Length: 162
Picture (cartoon, rainbow, N blue to C red):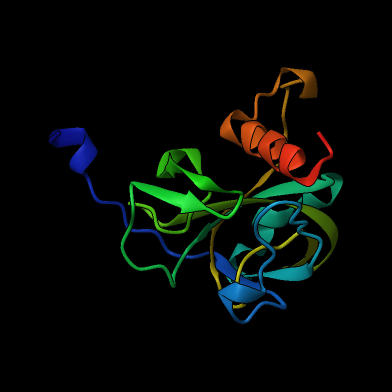
């Protein structure tokens, strides 16, 4: 492919994540992993007007950069399902052609350009590209979980809970 798909975009981080995680191994992964850690999104001072009205939202999408990932794999085994390889675009793998991460966090509070959040799964110092309010009109019963549901079912059978 050439043309439109070959364009290059330069992005400047809007801030950084302050997280309890210093090393990838500390971040909960795999079956049953819960992301409840508290952290802070520290935005650049010049962007403070952009935070107007954000306190009215309970949850936020955070777009960020896997700045410590190198290279990418189009197919790999992932912590949620180590039995079957999956395509990178059907996973949350950090080894992606464009190392962009997406996390939904709960907004706990705001102080100036600091957003206190719950649910971080990023390393301390991770660059933040954007923040958006979490809005979804998709009913929970309409969501499909793809291979994740299948991996959960296999785990339940193996553990005798299925």
